[in-house]
Length: 585
Image 1 (cartoon, rainbow, N blue to C red):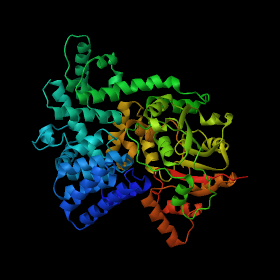
Image 2: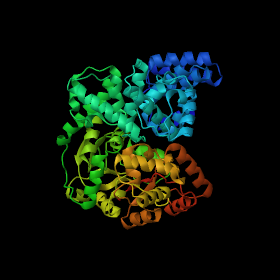
Image 3: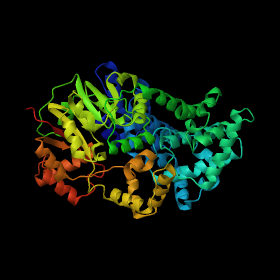
Image 4: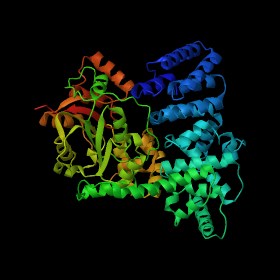
């Protein structure tokens, strides 16, 4: 992670370690300036010393931790650099969305893993042994690397060559477990981290019939162990957890009666205790509306089976800003009427899923208090369990169908529908219903799929339909591997390709609609809505501003945006994300 990428992230979500008024802040500011100056002058020992002093004063200073990693890496201290990068990522989990640079950093601090990735890719679909993958050095060469372990326990791995080496390592660990071979603590901890990764990505890694057979053998031994007939090793339990969630095992609760090593206990918590908590939370979630529309029922069923997305960490180092400041910073010349609200900012978030986006908004905007709704109780229970105590009083969850929200009497300052309307049979109908929930002068944040931007997704959906893949986990795994063997491997540029629920959402969704900028323009004109602007990350937004300025265009001119997308069809590969304002009349 280079300094430019880190600064961009911190600009969007200021660090809790950012400088504040007071003597400690003055000292921290001086130390950071000194460390940065030494780093730029290649005085690496002095830079490392200054960064370490700063981190003793402010352990949550993410940029200092990242920069220290860069200094240590330049000094050839790869393991220390890895630990520093890992700490920076833990402080700034939003950077996991930029997985390419993270993977490059990982390979830089852990060269044996880069070599193993190449060997695994060359051997695919075979699963080489530890020695073949790691050039005879064994698993010890990578097992305890801090950055690798942090990645495995924090986010889906979003790089297919890294996925392949982890798939091969999983198979080798399974063989070791099936043979009952003893392992050291580092190997057990790595196996547990890999089990956590597989749970996070919902077991999207490909597996073979031989692996399935070995897993069933160990499961049979586990059943005997639960009856007191035999014992099962911690590695064997972790091996099962690499292939199936522990809460799906018969009599899984009996696992809570045993004392496990710390790493295994972490897996038991993730895969058994926490799902049990979510099941208990379902009954506490209000049912705000009925869900009886046919499409809504089918969409609900998909997300009951695969709550979306399965996230682990949310940034807690965000300094909240007023909504007016946020919009003015992102759209400096846009014409919009300020809300002038920094307290009691009423928000409705529809299609909140597992709560990642809603909680991000609650942290981001000053005074935000929101109602977050979704069709899926499984998703809402996940969201409720993951909601930090500091936000619990500001976010209310409820089950509701957009199509029935016209019956509620509440209105809101902001309605966010940033990824749900395109899953309705008629997105315009849902949009109109939500518009009625916006107060005069209020704001909407909308997300819609682009017909142009999703052309390869459309092609992949046709490929899937033509070959008749189902929506089971095994079928989605098979489809992913088949797609990687075609020109449609371009799909691997989407983060959604790397977890089961997200891949199902992208390629197997029961209902998807796409639109165009002219259609958006027509809807806004019909309803008298003011377009504020398309939302991008800061780096992309700066490039687009420069392009519009060079051309003499207004960034509120939707005809110009349509021309731009036609010329550059990857502009909106994710979706159109934009802000608009309702008239005050």
